[in-house]
Image (tube, rainbow, N blue to C red; front, side, top):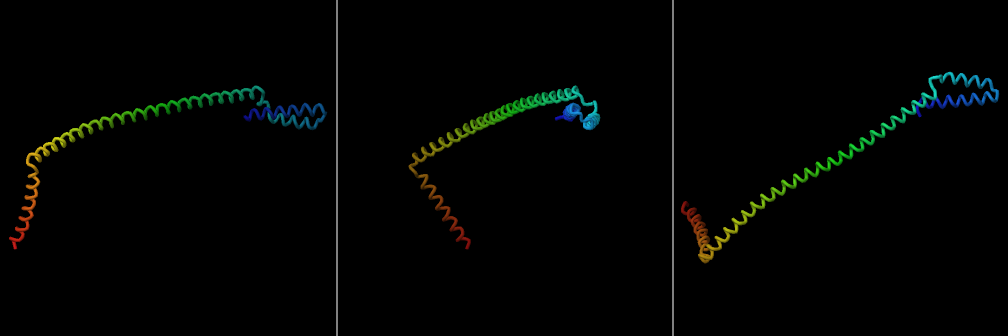
Length: 155
C-alpha cells in the first residue's frame, strides 16, 4: 500500500469513528478523533488516493510492457546465438571436408606410387630369380669381413 492510500484509509476510519461517537454522544471521543483528523490534514483526499492508484497501475503496466519487451529480446538473442553457432559449425565442417579431400588425394597418389614401385620390384625379382637377395647377403658378408680384417691389419 502507498502512504497516500494508508493515510486515506486512516482518515476514513477516523471519520467513521467520529460518526459513531457522535451518534452515541461521546463528545470527548469526538473531540480526540477530530484532533487526529486534523493531524492527517487535508492533503490526503479521495482524488489524491485515486491519482496515486492510477500512477501505481500505470507503473505496473509499464513494468509488464518492459518485461514483455525483455522477454522478446531474450528470445531473439537465443535464436541469433543458435544461428551463429550453426553457421560456425557449418563453416568448420566445410573446412574439414575440404582438408579431408586434399588428404585423400595425397594418400591416393602415395598409394599409386607405392603400388607402382612394388610392381617394378616384383618384375625385377621375377626377372633375376631372386639372385638380388643373394647379392645383398654377399655384400653384407664381405663388408663385415672387410671390417674385421682392417681392424686386424692395424694391429
